[in-house]
Image (cartoon, rainbow, N blue to C red; front, top):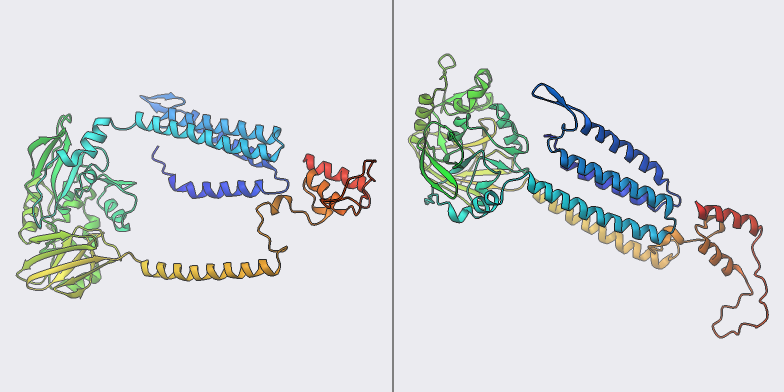
Length: 493
């Protein structure tokens, strides 16, 4: 049920294009495509019939998570197959074929949209959850907005993207466009990262690492979620709100580093808490910054108890940025340190980031699997991170060059159409009714028009009187009977 195939719409568009090309063919074999489509529909139908186990018993027709949706799709597919078969078999007139095809597509589009919206509502959250608690939550949930302070919000077992409606940063999000580093980080600590970021509350070290200050959960949740250091402060808009007394401000330093071996050998479910004890560095980074940090003793690693977690949070918060402000281009942070330090930011690493410290450009290090850090000197430092989309300039340049080529192509084709109008005609009907010889006759009307145009003594002048007596028979080309018979067969096909 977690199979994720929406990106295959590109393949569907290619199939639609193949259908268009087939319809423009002189004699398309539409039954061939219909046959294979029916075979695949039958295969998917069999999948829906297959059984699954519930309470030790095999139950048929319930393998899909939402059977009514699945069988609705099957019904629409079968209806489309039947409609297409009738079109191919019984509608020979091109104009009627086009009219019925477009009408059928419109009807199926409406039916599918109605079913999709209806089943979506029946399997989704309630109006109260979506509108009152979500969309209108920004007006009814009041969290502190302190100048120069940044924090994230966590929602336990709630609808995706609640905090996004409230304009609050969050770690719980359904978002397809994320840096690749996020996809590497979550699995490294034992969190599944599919189409969304939904870390379970058992990974409470992640909450400290990513500067989560508030946890919200539905007031109907009994018992409430437990995370060390989170205490209930109030209830608003159907949510209980807990505050994290172990909150670590965004941008903090470490005393120790850990190696990849130490990290990989540690219990996966506790690695999020290990990352609060030491910064994970690569071997090259250890050589580069080994004079700033000392290695965490691999023989006496913490066992990740609640008390050790709380102590680690307090240590990290001691030397954290006193200001962190975001803008449309990145963020600016300020920190005061007694020694040279590596300042860690739980912002996903991406090649588009660049940074300066006190106006001087510095290297952005990828640490803790998928986040960023920069080196700062002794004293007060202003750190500025700026993001530029990788390849943006190259893409704009290629687009400009492509426009020049397109303009040149259009000018050249305009010249050809004027010089050789027949060979470069762009009539929309050229591919279906254009006839330049008897061998290319496509329809009965085109055949008759061609015969008439070849008759030398047919009156064509508008001012010429048509004689009352029987007109002379037109002079037909050689072997007209065999040619007419051949064309009739083609017209029938």
